[in-house]
Image (tube, rainbow, N blue to C red):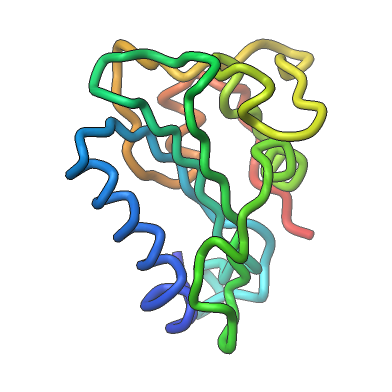
Length: 158
């Protein structure tokens, strides 16, 4: 997905570097990332997102499973120049990202870890990450939907 230089080279890269540090410390990560919105297209074919989002589930050790203490990091980074280079400035709740994208990501993670009024279920089915069966590293949301057998819902463009 097209990203501005400040987003890709600094803010987004900073979060990726932090994730690599966590892995070197023995953590296991599950990462879902994707675009949100539209600022137009490149050559009339590739959508330039308004922002880029990422959800990172941090397990204390490989295979440990999700617990009430499972750490969840969620960010929504503006896809523009002149943004803050520190990814922490763009932390949001998973519920916020679900509201933006229309997707339901982590109903296996205790609600307290996800931030503000989180509710499970999609209304037309539940979507659970297969924590102990398959790793989801980093992919665009439509591919995640296929992996998780989610209803076919395109990302909202607002």
